[in-house]
Image (cartoon, rainbow, N blue to C red; front, side, top):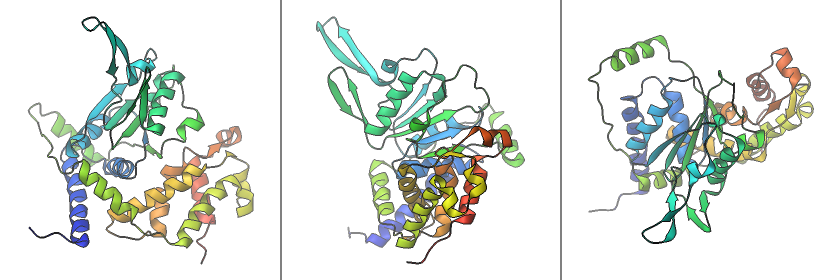
Length: 330
């Protein structure tokens, strides 16, 4: 059998990525934006924080995506009494062998849904975030590498904040994106109601990709070109959040307590390359950067109490930055 060319391989990956979206859409209706952001995180090795009220198919989405991509999936419900050992595992005593052995926790999977991550105390959140950053877990004296790909999708309920432990800003920064999951439109919700009220509805999604395909797509995204002017544009966007007065954002400067970190620059670069690839281009456009700016920056720009008092939102600040900062010529 003849070897396929690089162009043919790329075209095949484009087709498979389209098929992934179509297959997930047969199970989850009307959440294309959330799906695209989850795929972005998976193929650029970045974790995603989902914020939305319960009942918006977040668990169903991740579970279905895991089946379509042939990946291991675990859902962990975070509660106030959860311990780090419940997450990563622990040493247990085996009476038959008269020795201790490792019992691995649910963190050992490819896709992890950390449901209501702000329900657990800081030590559990820290154990999760260490796994996210290092992609390894230490149990007793043994360190275990987590399987690749490894993606954490954490959820927060923005409505019910009683008895929660909000993630500190420094820990939030470890998430590539914070994605707001909104309600469905009327037509989509009507379709969901009809489908889910049929108790005989069953659909087992087909496997479209595997780990090898995911590695190939990551390699293709890595090849996407970004001009020097766009690279500098990303840096200007991030610096405008740190030094707004230098960019003529005098009103916005009164509301910004902390600007975006260096991770923002890295993730804007990676995310915009995925957008270019998913649009079947091997080069990034300014629109690609702008399309991911809000989700990458919204949890990294920290506003002060004056902003809350005046009803100023992070989205408004980011929109002002995008309007004010222009792309220079190199």
